[in-house]
Image 1 (cartoon, rainbow, N blue to C red):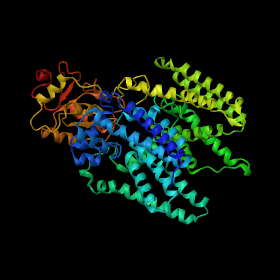
Image 2 (image 1 turned 90 degrees about the horizontal axis):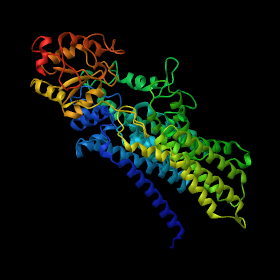
Image 3 (image 1 turned 90 degrees about the vertical axis):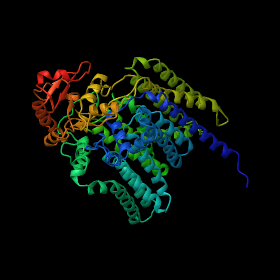
Length: 622
């Protein structure tokens, strides 16, 4: 049997295009990856501990003695731990799994969109996702969001396969992926799930199959998701509470952490939410304004327009009505759900949370762009379509120029965006004027497509690439040319030397430090166990004062480094926000029994809990 040469050429062109996208993304993500620093030191310490012990791996512990655990489930840290175990502890070995996860997400997004909207849409969706600034910055960072995006995109792919196959394995795979996503970032994984479930259910109802059969298939997914989640929860809950690491929460309750602190409290606020330079102001325009605009705002208007057009075509005259495809239901539902939740969140909110929205937004952009290209290839004049596309490109380019405005380093890209938009408008008009006997001339269409790509992609690409000029550190990773986070600064060698020389042989920890980030930096520097007080914010219920007294009496703990919120504390009033915490009770007792030592060149004072003489004579220890 002979095969038409046109089909292989189209497939080869698609593979070359996808390969080019993935190669360009890999270069972008890996560029100077050895200089990324410790990123989020809290999470890097989790990878360090998880690579060192099975207990740390199971519970996601940031301290090498695995007495505490993070406020996140551990799954996202397991690839990092494996990388550290094989390659050693380096910033690049911690970041490498996120690079691979992001590339895999782009490839899976291509495979998914390709099945529901065609080859062109698939490649465009992968490119839009891979070059989104929030995706680029997280590909070089150690937050759980990259694995979450991968698992949810895989769930979308499996959903598309499940609705077209009677085989139960796809349903089981979908449930396992949802359960794994939950073990990556708790309830955040559930935001797109209603869209996945709706596609499964509506596909049966719309296809005149039994609604009961659709519910049965959904039940299989739910059971598989529960089983996947239980694979971690059961061993954890079977471990006696006294032997489990203390979760990073005020009460130590895992349920309160999942449902409250990292659940509804993130969405709901008890009162009016003031505007913030970090979380903006809740509302419909939140994601289109700073600080979100530069991270993902580039995609949102085009994605929303694609969804609106699909709804209009569905609600139009019966003779011309076009029902939404599985892809539009899937990614449109995901888009609406994620955008809605992120827009109204009144609790803790960071711009990088918008990575949850990136796959759906990119998919809609890819599908909408492919539809526009197909419509332009029609031999009909369709001046309304050309005029509408010209207005859309001009508006999106104007928005991109506005987003670039506050950044002087990116000023040269503003005229590039606007000129490319102007060329697109001219090419669209020329394409309507120049026709050969009802056929569309190719050069205006090719020019319009190329210039529109520049107009719409230059801004986010330049914004994303500008991130590579500096390390991104701390708990609020942001793409862009401005360094916005520093994390905790490294400790001076004099301080480390003092702690190592003066600790007794019985010491279990090099020192204790209030807040996990400050403790993690010292642990990463020295490779020695460092005990965190109070978890990430300092307000965790660990440790209790009685525990600290026992450790000090046994010689397991001698020093508290007064970093974090206590770096200017001298044994008096507790820092703001700490007065009612367990940490404050510990520090009050420690201030009564210990002596504050100033280490020359150390940078931070040290509280010696077992001084060998009066406090006014402790300077001799330095």
